[in-house]
Image 1 (spheres, rainbow, N blue to C red):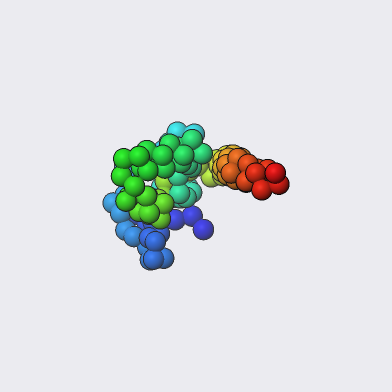
Image 2 (image 1 turned 90 degrees about the vertical axis):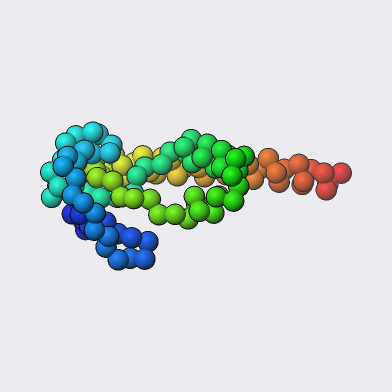
Length: 118
């Protein structure tokens, strides 16, 4: 269900009222949107952005890692016709992240298995 620009969900499920924006642009296409046609959803985070943020946080302020991973992202406006492209990109980023996690797990597990067999 699309939300109006002055209602965005909070982490606790309640609606948070924010000041209406004078101009809304689609976060994916950049197209100018009318407030009533905007589709509100969390921003698209790429695997590269996620990994670089995690590494930077681990190296500079490791205590903030929990806050960064669990804090809710503010919703951004998308054009209704961009929903399919947004879903495709989100799926692609999820597959990249899954592949990276499997690669890391493989690099950790394979040497252990080979070492225990010898």
